[in-house]
Length: 289
View 1 (cartoon, rainbow, N blue to C red):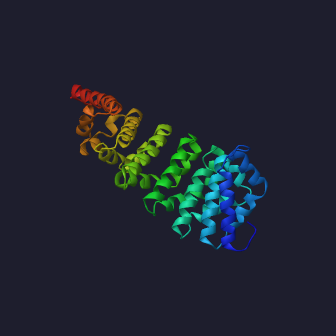
View 2 (tube, rainbow, N blue to C red):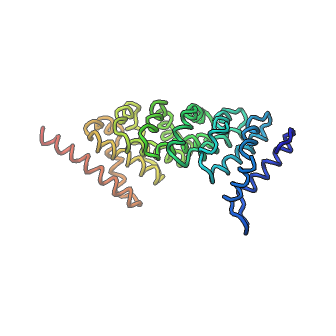
View 3 (cartoon, rainbow, N blue to C red):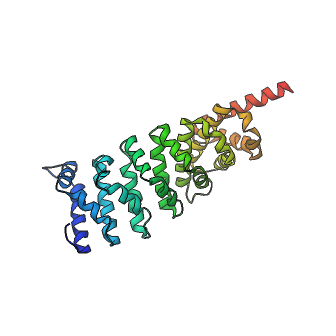
């Protein structure tokens, strides 16, 4: 890996990648990874991430992701690898930036404080750029946000909120190219709403109610469940009356009613629970009148 020639560097990186993903009778993949890092693999990888060769960068990023599976992301923070990975998310080469986003997701996965540090290095600005790329990269951006939100740390979710990701996520729920994209995007919102009810008014301003109602017409069970859970959280938190006009204008009550006979029992149960909340408000309003 010490050669100045890109092709030789690529062969060296490939060799380390094989070692770090292979187990044999004598050693496990984790032990092989430790041997590679002890031999100075990380310092070399840090150097090759700055290579002028896209091929070297791509393989180095893949190797970093493999090593990060076995070692904490903290291992990479002191040798320039983390900042190099973030920088390469902005590469003009699609193979390089895809590997960079993959590596970034692996680096943040282990601990909340590591995730926080990586965000402080500027990762969220690059994640925002993911939404300007094609579906596969957008999905990696959504995956990053889901990992961040899943740590259930208010400071981390506040970082997502402060960077104004909600319009981008809601757009993917409404207009995402696949049901998988829509469902995973909805799950990010569901996680954040369940942790932080204070952001619900902002989401309502972003027209989340109409997005939910559009989702209630989906054939994707995962999207339906996440949309219903978001709706349930909103009603439990601020009450149905606060969203009644928007919900009814989007034909929400009828869409909810249609789900009572859905073949998925979880969807049936959720729609019935929400319908009870809706009907309670309607009945109360009728009594007052």
